[in-house]
Image (cartoon, rainbow, N blue to C red; front, side):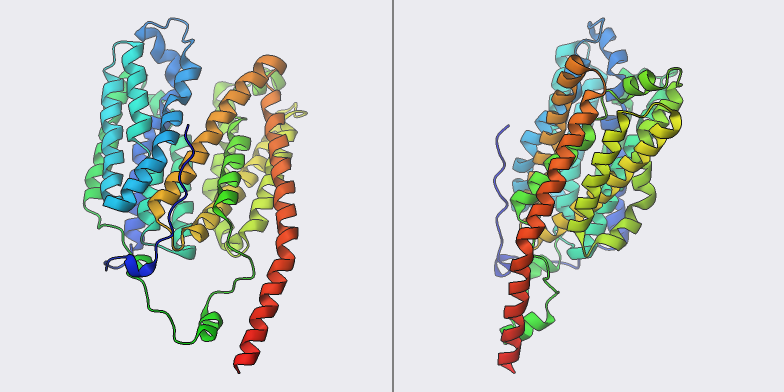
Length: 429
């Protein structure tokens, strides 16, 4: 995978005039479109072991490889599509993503060989990318807390689809095989595309630009407080990669670990344990946003701490109660991390082309997921199902240490900046 190009910083005066920013209904419509379009992408991969035998792979030995194929190609394509969105319009590229999913799902649903099915998954990764496209669309029209709330809502749509989609697919299986459900569920991204076509192009106050104030000291007085420097893009990308790696690495072999620690656990109960962290996000995300949108770095540190403790707790957990407790602790870390990463992304979006930014964020997110899948497979084969959660614990601990060291280094710089600002204001008076 080639590294993404950093999004360009666009001067306000180069932007064209634009309509008013998106309203709440339009933001909810974008999140709803992402939710319905994600159903097949998130709900059908767990059933690859049932789909592949009908395509000639009797033992479903390719299930693990095919599981990550869309993720790999989505990582490759996201920065490219993001830059095109900034050049040709975010609405057009969001429509492209939804129609690309429709096409790939139709091909997958009618595939009659593993080669054709694999090609459909490659197309899903390359032509999809609805999450990055949706975030780029929102990022062009919203700023600050409004943008971070919208990004938090988008993550909620992803979590809801992750929880509900496998249940719906399983419920439909007696009537329609999971393989043919790809073709059936293609109607969802097609419907989303029709809804998005009715939305306006997303340009807002950031692209209209404003003139420079006559008095630069007055501008500092009226500006939002800058007690904490804006997070660099490289730091944001590193945090995104580490967060996705440390959370996703526990997914592939969790069911095996549960069965090993609590023999006789029903599949339904194991599924509830799997879904608990995502349910925590759905219940608490907006409250966490209200509490931490002014101090996202603290939330990031607390989130990775909870992730480290939650993952480490999977090792000694040997009862249903203890497993529930560590899954809830992991859910607290998942919620803090996702919300505060959204706040940091909204900070970084100021003055930058949103398509390129969110495409690059998606690259590092997908790269973290792929690396987590490989590390989980290697660790499980060498040391058993407890190895992936211990690896995730180590990465989370290292990230907490890095965030803490970064905060200590930045504190003298923040104090010096505040003192200089105070002196400038006094001398101007």
